[in-house]
Image (tube, one colour):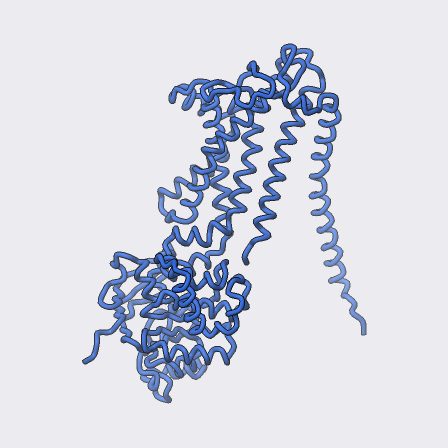
Length: 295
Length: 253
């Protein structure tokens, strides 16, 4: 009397372990490029990495010095674009998931959102150029560039908001409706408190996307160079153009001869570091809010 | 003097998309009676309740014709659907504790209509939890989460919530599937008291429960009324329809 398996079951168990190892290997494989990219960038950038690199202005025709104007410009663009796209995206997501009935108008809205999320950023750039720079008369400016980034990030925020809302079980909503609560009372009491972590994560992830895109701002409000004081927190007016990290990296890599070799790499490290920092924030927010999950 | 019936259903038809699930049924429910509804799965019992409090509207493909009158008013035409739902307490078959404290679960509905005073809310919470036979088990931990209660306790929490907006009609849809027999009996006793103040619609798969509680019982089958009569008749040896006898005695099909 032993617990032994038949040959057939043994073969199935072998397949099971092979499948598991293949899946695990593929997941692990994703770590390798990240480590290589980060390692390579840091190694090449090492001579330039310092705090003063962050707050210095470019020197000797951008061949030396720091990245302060680009760093501040990127912060301007990201903050302004999300100030528009986060509220619009989240509120639209709430409408589409909680209120919208299944009719042709809402189906078209849905389709528009999905397609807008898939439009390449260069096309957003052209739209921004036509709509904000020319038609709306904002000119090449921070406003135009931010609004273009907002159009680009908004559909993704709508989609992630809807996904977060949809993860709240429908039975909770029905229980509220059954006692005579309105939709808004239901959303306020039950839906939002339990989906806010997903909504915030979706918004935060768009920060790094807005910071990293080059095309949309190149056409609408980013410039190669702008004279700015070292460490000046408010160097730009909203109707002015600005420098930005992604654009700066592109310029250094392609337009400026004889750049000190470590500078483009250091710029890339800052951009990547910012993205990782933002993503880490998203993870922390999610873990914190998940720990308060109520079912 | 007899009062008009509280609920009058006339030629009610309900379809989900092309599939009709209730095929033109008519009946009425009197004030302060316990009205049993029995029938096999897919016979339209739950859909019928959802038509009465109009939560059927949340199924976008549902199409409804005929009329349901509550106290003389066509529910399809009431101005405030929220007032209608407050008048009708609904206990769904699957227990749902809302993801908030036990206290807030029961205080939610009163708060929705603007009640804010702590003492009033506390009184309602205690009264409703007592009626749902849950008070003794949770009175020392009203701040813990409703979702962390056991299935049977959540079911009673659902009943307490349905009573919290002081309905005139109470719809119970399979309220006892997750509750032990002893507690079920306690709640059944409460229902007998509650009928002094409200009309109770009792949808149940436990035919014996309908027999114990209901004044009249409706046997619904495939969206049609097979028989509606006083429970003594339905559960007797000789109901008008042979099918009723077979269903009640488990020799159906």
